[in-house]
Image (cartoon, rainbow, N blue to C red; front, side, top):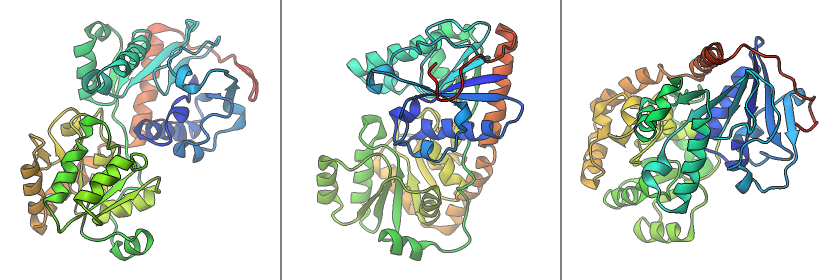
Length: 381
């Protein structure tokens, strides 16, 4: 099978969950000797993306193209190239402008955040792009049952297409450590203990980061460690300085090894989001033996093992009660053990195998496999 991956996500993110998903699939396809994979990339694109920097793509497999358009505009347009491949799969809601000759177009639906949580022109623009891609897909992958449910609720007509729920995986870099890493974290990042960990974006309203600040304000014995989510904005820093003073620390673009140490040493991961397509930090934390506190909504019940870790309403008092309960070692064990077992169900290897199986299923339904007819590396498609 000849597969063409559109790497546009590496131009759209410096880092993020979709970049992780895409790069992990690529790593496994590069080990696959039965199928041939090519990568469509803008000339000079993706250089700032953390995940792309770690990929060692073969030059013979990279199909470069020049574009006079800024990526902020090109991201919303179809791929205007004559393509001939068995499978075309875009990393972020692009589709071929010309119908593939006997090949199939696969789209991954990650979430419906814009449809559910955003208003105004940004919602209209992103929603239109996503629907155009989904409507033209020969097969659709949803990363959770929650995402599939949202898709069918919003666009029931798409239920006639082949749909498959294929869960994200979790890196083996996240694991329980036997040694105490607190001294190393103090030395390297000057972190004060004990701390509550927050991972990911903060500024979108559905992330409920204001609740996190309020929880820490009402728990003066705990510090807040934030990872990722972009640089702290002036307004954020002013609020944190006023509310928590010196009880917060922000780390950006750290390695998985260091993030794993942070999970291992944290009192808990506080995941305050009211909507997620999947929620990778929840899975990473559980595999590292870190208790999680999240809300019972969207995909969270699919990922979080212990019902005790899921709070029905985003209320400070309920979060505080769970934080205090986690101070009891017997209760921590009650939460950690199911999380470790749950994390074993997810792997990037499983995600890769199921994705490949779905390609074959859609191909058998729609088309006969076709040899890839693309120019050599370094040329323009």
